Amino acid sequence: MESIKAYIDQNKNRFLEELFELLRIPSISSQAEHKPDMLRCAEQWKSILLTAGADKAEVMPTKGNPVVYGEKIIDPKLPTVLVYGHYDVMPVDPVELWNTQPFEPVIKDGKIWCRGADDDKGQAFMHAKAFEYMVRTNNLPCNVKFMIEGEEEVGSGSLSEWIVEYKDLVKADVILVSDTSMIAADVPSITTGLRGLAYWEIEVTGPNADLHSGIFGGSVANPLNTLCEMIAKCMDENNHISIPHFYDDVIECSDRERELLNKAPYSEEEYKKSLGVKALRGEKGYTKIEHVGIRPSFDLCGMWGGYTGEGSKTVLPSKAYAKLSCRLVPNQNHEKIAVLVKNYFEQNAPDYVKVKVTPLHGGQAYGCPIDLPAYKAAEAAYMDVYGKQPIPTRSGGSIPIIARFEEVLGIKSILMGFGLGSDAIHSPNENYPLEQFFNGIKTIPMFYRHFAELMQLERGGANAIS
Image (tube, rainbow, N blue to C red; front, side, top):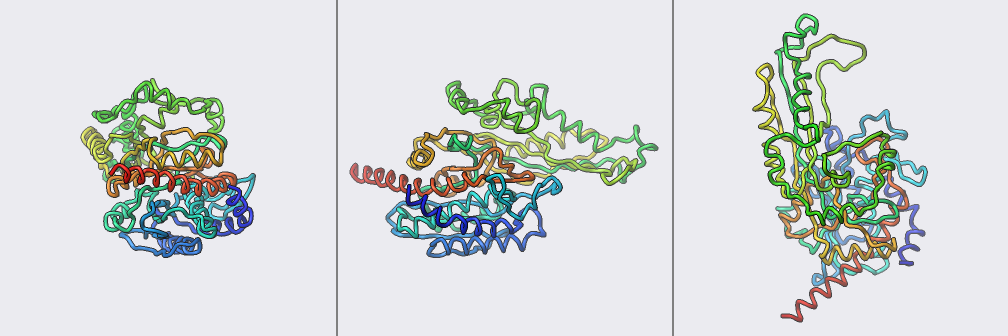
C-alpha cells in the first residue's frame, strides 16, 4: 500500500495533466458534429494505454465510434482481467448553468470540474494509472486487457456487435468496471445490480400546419396538450406505471432482501437538501432506496413543439414531440417493454391526432452475486484502502452493455465505482473529488492482487479434485 501511495505522490501532477488533456476533448457521442472529436479521443486513449505499459493498443473501427483495445499478457496461464470504460460524454446543455467552461477542467474545492470528470473519463483513467503503477513497479499479477468504447451514452450499439466479432480477442475471467458510485466518500460500496433502460421518441401530429390559436383554438386539438394528457395517464396517483402488462416480469424482492438493501446509510433530509427539493415522490409502498434499486421508473426526458422563441406567438402547433425513458429491473426485457409502450401510445391515440412512437435504444438490467471470487477481491481491495467492508448496493442507473457482456462473453462484471451522488454526472457542473480519484488508483491494484490470489486458489482446488 505504501508503494502505491508513494507512486501517486511522485506522479499526481502528471496524472492530472494527462487527464485534463483527455477531458478537453468534447467527445459527445449523441451529436454528429463531434464525430472528429470521437476519433481524436480514441487516439488519445490509445496513447494513454501504450504509455501506461500495454504491449499493444489499437483504435478499432466499428459501424459507429471506434473501440480502443489494449492488452498486456504476462503469462497466458494466469487469470485475465478485462477493463471496460467509455470515452464518450453527455451533452453540456444548458451551458448557461455551468460555473466553469464545460470542457476546460478546473480544480476547485478539492474537485475536478469538467464534463466527463467522473462519467467516465476520470474513472476509466484511474485504471490506466493503476495499471501503469503495476507495470512500472513489476507488480502486475495477471493479464490485463482494455476495452474503451465511444457509445455508452447512446446505448453501446456498435460495441454490442463488436464483442461478437472479437469474442476471442477479449476473452477474460472477469470484467472490471468503474462507471458507478459509492454511497459516500467514507462509505465504500460495490454495485451488484443495474437497472435496464428503454428509450423512445414520440411524435404527435394534429392539423396539417401551425394554426392561429385564436381562430382555431378550442375547436382543433392541440398536439402539445394531447401529448401531455397521454403522458400523464401513464402514471397513477400512487406513482405506479399504468401501462398494461408493464410489471408482468418484475420479480418482487423478498422481505429479507429489502431489509439488507435498506441498511445502507441514508438521510432523507440530507438527500432533499442536496437536491434543493422540499419533498420526494416515488411509488407507494417502497422506500427511496428501493425506488432506484429494485423498482422500474417512467420519465418524460424532454418535450418540444410550437413556439419557444423570445416573446409571444399565438400558435396552435401542428406537431409535438417528447422523449421518454423507463428504467427497468432484472427479468424485464427492454425489447418487450419497448413494444408495450409503443403499442400503448399508438393504439390509445385519440382520433384527432396521429401518434408515432420510435424506440431509440435500450438495454437489459444486470445482477451480480456476492460470492464470486472477483466480488470478494473487490471487497478486500476496498477494505485495504478504506478500512471498511463495502456495502453491496443496487444502482438506479443503467449501463446497457454490462448485461450484453454476460450474454456474449459468458463472464460477470465487477462494478467498482468511486463516483459520488454529488458529482452531477449528466448535469451542468459535473465534478469528481480528487480524493476519490486518487483512492481509486490506490484500490484498483489491490483488486488485482486479491483476484489473482483467489483465482489461483480456486484453480488449484479444481486441479486437486481432478
